[in-house]
Length: 315
Image 1: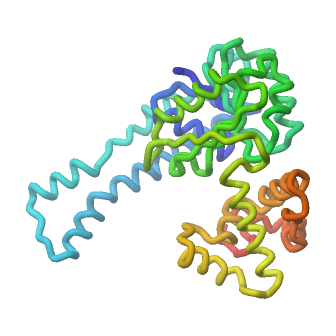
Image 2: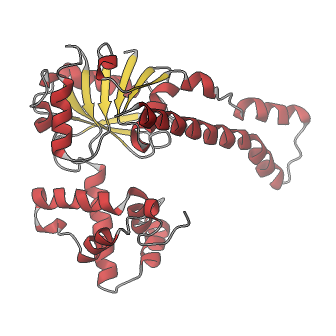
Image 3: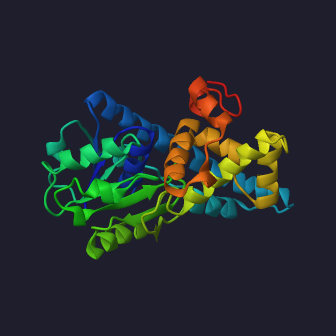
């Protein structure tokens, strides 16, 4: 595979595009118009600029860490640390791999298309149907959905055996996991190709890691994490502990990098709400939507992106 199409140039779509470009693939980043596609390019530049700034601090941090141990480094040792830890992040070279487009015809000869559009089943179904008119017979069409039915999407596509889910985690340039989930129609060849391409990639921190899962709402990670957030809200509603205490407990007692309330705010409480609705339809009462969460979404308290969720944030 050499050419990748990404549909949806928002935060997630542009981040997925960045990972592929970082690995040397030519990426066609599609959105409704060129302004939105170019905003995606700007986000990629921001991601890479932040990464370069971070990498440039690593040698000094390592030198200071060693010297705090009472070890005096020679000039040669300092030069070695700089040589080993410094990376030349060629921002323009990576961004040149990404071509902003607003026409599906530009995706005709790509090897893999990943959609990262709004998380609604009917929207994704319509997109799969429309792409039947543009993509070639050999293109793999993947959805980045976290909970929706790929079998239903595939039924709208001209080559359902070429479809599957490739679920990246946010942000994909630091989180290496990709859940590979076939539709009932997916061919083994399609699944193996998707698994292989991810296996050969890396992000800013590590090698990318694909895992296979069967199609069931939430797959592996979200089915567990949403239940953790769900249970945390119930704990606060029952006045067992406040949000800060729950987050501290899960970070210091269970080794979580973020507490469940912090995670909910980071993901977006509207997204948590929509996923819980899907889970409630599939799994029943164990995923009943907490009244507090419902009211927060109605009020627009959606987390970090709104400036207020379980916590308040400076915009």
